[in-house]
Image (cartoon, rainbow, N blue to C red):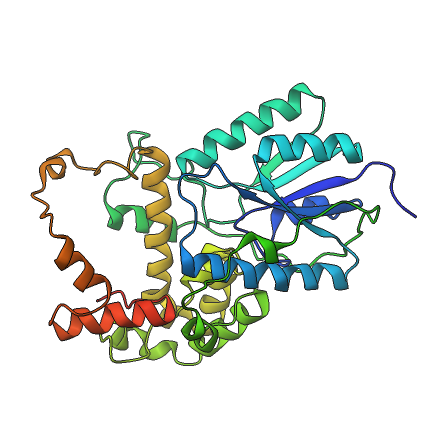
Length: 334
């Protein structure tokens, strides 16, 4: 039986079923999911991220479909698309997990304002961070700008256990969806190395996490050596939300205890970066410290090209750039 009024789950960088707060809320009634390719986003994904997104959306669409839930695809202005979808389906709510980039915050505020004025309930959730950027404050109630005291506070917080995949109830009236095959996300000139290296999607994320945790006792030593396979390779899974930081935190600390702290500290750096971005939204275009505004950058197009293709003549630099070109990944120390 089709529910007369569905809920819309707007997916963004939260492409998973487990420990997904917006999905948990939507699952309390019949719903369908939508992913919107935002053509106005000034920070559109690059080639490797586009390849990853294509694979991840296909995997998620299959997982939702197996549970009777539609995942539809739309390209354009998210406000216009959500407005049309709520009118077409007479939706009784729209749920999403928050993004923290300045453009996304302003966009989401506009959408939330429209929905509330239209009498459509909407709610956003924290599906990407251990703690919200405004939840951690200095003694003077301001944001942190130094990592170590921020990390001490973050460690003192008791994070809730990750939630499992809930029972899902799909709203199955037909809705017109675009084909992501026509979005041109897959690279035309490269991508074989990505195929050989990665398995995007929630299943691949857990396989990568569990494989890494088997050798986490060596992480503190191996992480500094680019020739070692010592890092987690979890960053793209975190970026697209195929794993939540809460899932990683609990899985690592539950199994490995204090041995996991050097690795969990890296999750802390990720949190700190979002903390800074939220409180200093000009960071994408300006340095946090104004003294760096006059850094003497060199303009040399030939040197830039040599660096991009890994032919500077400096072996360590070139190895890192060639690895980046082939796999989409570069070691932190490079």
